[in-house]
Length: 291
Image 1 (cartoon, rainbow, N blue to C red):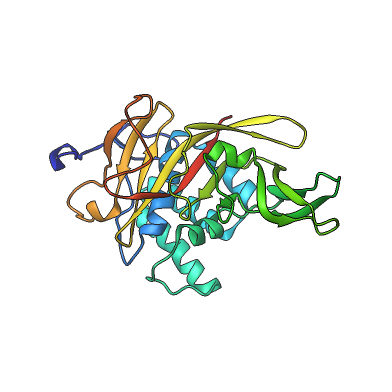
Image 2 (spheres, rainbow, N blue to C red):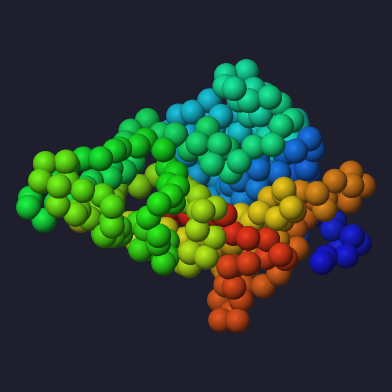
């Protein structure tokens, strides 16, 4: 773990945001009132945004949700010296408390947080039942940049997105023959989230390709893995250069210490694994579109 004396802020010359702050390491949100589900999703998004400011405009244009706008407005205000990352997080929490059946300060799941944040203006993916007798039936479609593993077992996330998996119990509604399932992506949002708390042993790949219906392939890079242990969420954040930073909002609550994260390794090191972290079980992963 990084020694507190090394958690120091570096002030750089003014840029487009006059009070923008730069750190020797990524920084995270301080835990407060059961905020860990929000923290574990929002902190990696903030860290990735710091490396690509254009993500804000693209993300908001794609998502169009009040939660996304509140979050990124909070990021901008923080970097302008007009608030904190916790203010940005809590603006989303209060929005969810006012507009859904959520009580501020109660425990939330990663799926609930991602579902509120990652809705888009258009359909992202469609799921089809494919019958060998030619009865190709649309099963569902979704405008969320979020997929959740349920009954179908997957060996890896890249198998999941190129899904053509036999279903042992699913039957064609026309001829009753056993069917397979295909996942078809209609578009590629800037962020994709995968929730797999029901399948924690799934192989979390570092990169994956998503094929659109016009056969164009888009590449996504692993941005974060979220872990669950003892009623608490933590995160490992993966940078484009492969470095991995550990984040636990409960470890940085001391206001006298800068909330910088700990570098714990690199995914470029063959011995490093994201399949477990400090006793936590992986339950979700975030991927960024490579442009």
